[in-house]
Length: 265
Ligand SMILES: Cc1cc2nc3c(=O)[nH]c(=O)nc-3n(C[C@H](O)[C@H](O)[C@H](O)COP(=O)(O)OP(=O)(O)OC[C@H]3O[C@@H](n4cnc5c(N)ncnc54)[C@H](O)[C@@H]3O)c2cc1C
Image 1 (cartoon, protein in one colour):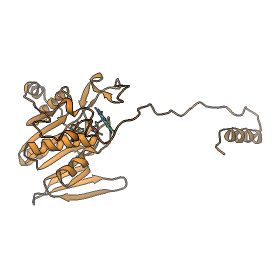
Image 2 (tube, protein in one colour; image 1 turned 180 degrees about the vertical axis):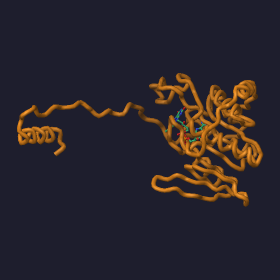
Image 3 (cartoon, helix red, strand yellow; image 1 turned 180 degrees about the horizontal axis):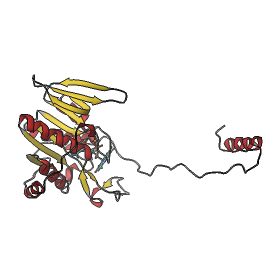
Image 4 (cartoon, helix red, strand yellow; image 1 turned 90 degrees about the vertical axis):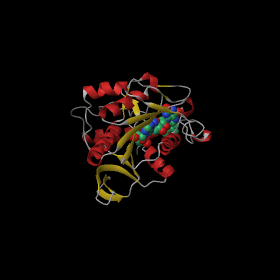
């Protein structure tokens, strides 16, 4: 069974800088770690492999430093890692990101199962998995909390929804986006971290992936960040309206006056 796990590197600290001209994250300004949900996806892939055998391939689209996160995936137990990296991929929105990831899956000959996190903790759109599934014409299951291969070769998946849980059965090949309720990711052993540090990470670019130029990077992005700003924090200053001994009617009149001034009533 070949499982492909999509891994995104996200900033580990709050010291993230924003490029004032492009409104993009300056990823080089922060240390990167594996997106937490992707750790769950990786753990799920490794558990499936230990049950039925096969191969776990971690893929990531991003700049050269994303290879460090791919090494984490290898240290956890992944068999191979592929970095999708090129200047031409820069500025990608979710569509352009999903396109490159999908091209990679095609280039390596497909997968029985593609696992992703349900969302990234930085951009947080949750769109990459569903778009990838559409591009690859695969069935998709999101918000997975349990995965189980059944005797007939299908995958049974529990999904956690707002008010209830759902169990679905999906035929393979399929794409599944997982939540943190699925499992507890393993810590790599020091010896595996050392092995992963020396492992070869293949790098694929747009030429090798046979990408269409107008579907990658900024050119392939249909969305654009037009503005990035800190949300307005509501004024939480406390206002003492009455004083001890003041009549409740007078305090009520003061409150009414303030609410009227602020256009609340
Ligand atoms: C409008 C818009 C414009 C943007 N422009 C830029 C830009 O110019 N420059 C820039 O650096 N970023 C940009 N971003 C952020 C970038 O598009 C996203 O980081 C990327 O598309 C993934 O989206 P997401 O993080 O919301 O993924 P989600 O859909 O929330 O992630 C779900 C899962 O998809 C997988 N995944 C996501 N991204 C990757 C990846 N790169 N490699 C492997 N697996 C992945 C992971 O498994 C992850 O858990 C932009 C985002 C938006 C919404």
